[in-house]
Structure formats: structure tokens, C-alpha cells
Image 1 (cartoon, rainbow, N blue to C red):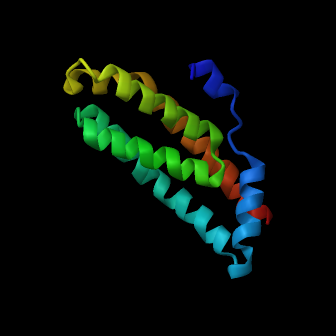
Image 2: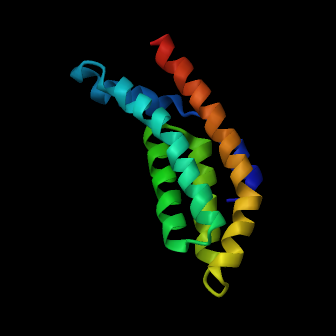
Length: 133
């Protein structure tokens, strides 16, 4: 997915949040706890991505990116999931024949700032969503 395609994705997919609320609402607001847990864990997830990329830890980076992508998809954070998917593809393609300790820091420099910006915007929108419900 090209960067311009990722930026075309919505920050949040309201349909995913609505489905989550419907599926989990029978359990005393479990859906809110689920979204709050995502918000609370997001800084840890993004920091793990940064750390593993900058240290050239390919296995750790793949694990961190997959965790970020999957958790983002589960709360409807479409753009953040798209950025993680794009980074995952780059990790798979660029690390095949190259040295991870050179490729991964370059990927961090190229991609991490956008991931952080998107994570902050997503957090803001999710918090607004929680407080409006």
C-alpha cells in the first residue's frame, strides 16, 4: 500500500466501533474497557516498534508491528493498521537480502514519525468517542 493510499484511510472506522459496542455491550460496558485498554497500551506498542526497529531486531520488530496492526484493526483504527501493514510489508521485503541492523533503523527514520502522529490522532478520536457514549 502506497503512503498516499494509507493516508486516504479513515483514522477510525465507525462501523467497527459500533459492531464492537453491540457485540460486547451485554457485558456492562466491556467494549469501553476494551477500547480504553487499546488506548493505554498504544504508547507501549509504538515504543516497542521504535525500539526494535532502531536496534535492528527483525524478529522483535515483526512481532511489534503485527501487534500494533492487529490491535488497531480490532478497534477500527484503520489508518494506524494500514501504516503497520505497510511497515510489515517493508520488513518482509527489505530484510530478505539485507542486514537488519542497517535496514530497520532506516525504516524507523522513514516511517515512525507518521505512526506516532497517527497514534496520537487515533487516541484523541477514541477518547472523544468514549466520552460521547
